[in-house]
Length: 79
Image (cartoon, rainbow, N blue to C red):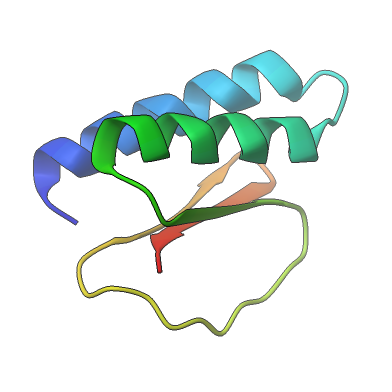
């Protein structure tokens, strides 16, 4: 992921989790992240937020972000 895009995506992810983590509303956080990334960087973004998940995906080269915010995992990619 290009550096500037990656930095903006991390900001979006942390903002969404700050907003939804208190209620453990990971679905709400993932919807907010996906919709924001779609608006900023074009359609076809997918997002998964939660604890204890694995993944095996096909995505566009250089459009993958996987990070942890505390114990919460965040996966964003463009399909």
